[in-house]
Length: 348
Ligand SMILES: Nc1ncnc2c1ncn2[C@@H]1O[C@H](COP(=O)(O)OP(=O)(O)OP(=O)(O)O)[C@@H](O)[C@H]1O
Ligand SMILES: [Mg+2]
Image 1 (cartoon, rainbow, N blue to C red):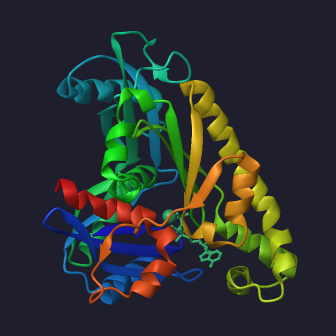
Image 2: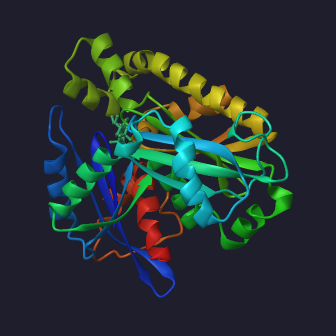
C-alpha cells in the first residue's frame, strides 16, 4: 500500500501483483479539514479503503528532508555507506546524530559544474544523498503503527514520482531505450503540484538528475481566492474547485500564484538544462493543484514545452469489485505519489 501523507489530503493506493501484473486493488482519499488532524484522516483512509495489505510504503517531503547530488571518488556501495556519513556533515544542515541518511550511486557521469564534492573526472561517481530528521521518520512510522500496519519503506515524494513513471509512464521497450546511451540527452520533468509545495524530478535516461521542492501549491491559490473575494478559506476552496459564474475573478486571483510557480519551474528547467547539457522536452503534471482551471495550459505556454496532465493509472488494471473506479479516475492526477510508493510491490 502506498500511503501519501499529504499536507491537505491523505491518499492510499494498494497495488497487488497478480503474477507479474500490478493490479490496483484498493484506494481511498480523505481531506484534512482546516485545523483538522492528520492522524484522524489516516484512520478514516484505512476504514474507507478496506485494504488487504498491512505493508505500507510512505514518503517524506518538505523542510525536514535534504536531497543532494554529490561527486565522490569511485568506490563500492559498502564503502560508500561508510564514507557518506563523514561527507554528510558538509551537506546536511541538521545535527547528524539526529539525522537518518541514505545514498545511491547514479549511473550518470559526474558533472564539472553545479554538483558538490570532489572535482569531476574519470575516477568519480555521482551519488544521490538523502538526509531526513530521524524524528520525522519516527513520527510517521508511529502514525502507521497506530493503525495496526507496518512501514516497509519510506521514500521521498520526488522519487515516488519517478517510480510511478517507471511503473506506467512508458511501455517496456521505450523504457529500455530510455536507459541506453543514445537517448541520454532526452529528459522529462515530473512535476507534482500539491497543496503547500510542488515537487520536481527531472529524469534523463530514465534516472533522476535533478530534484527540487518549491514552496508554492494549491493552498496559495485558495488563499488568493479568499483574499480577492473576501471569503473564508473553506468557501474559497469550494469556489476555486467549482467557480460557477465567478471564473473571471478566480482566474484573476490565482494568476499571480501560477506566475510565481511557473517562474520557479522555469528557473529549475533552465538550471538543469545548462548543468546537464540537455533539453527537457516534456513536462508531466500531477498533484491536486493541476486540477485548477487553466493551470496546465498556462504552464505549457509559459515554459514553451509539451505539457500534459498525468494519469498514473493509465495502462494499469483496476480490480473493479474492490475500487470505486469513477472516484479513482476523478482523482487520478493527485495519486501519482501514492501509486509510485505502492509500485515498490514489484521489488518486494
Ligand atoms: N477540482 C479542483 N480544482 C482545483 N484545485 C483542486 C481541485 N481538487 C483539489 N484541488 C487542490 O489540490 C490541492 C491538494 O492536492 P494534493 O492532494 O496533491 O495535495 P497534498 O498532497 O495534500 O499536498 P502537499 O503535497 O503539498 O503536502 C489543494 O490545494 C486543493 O485545493
Ligand atoms: Mg502531495
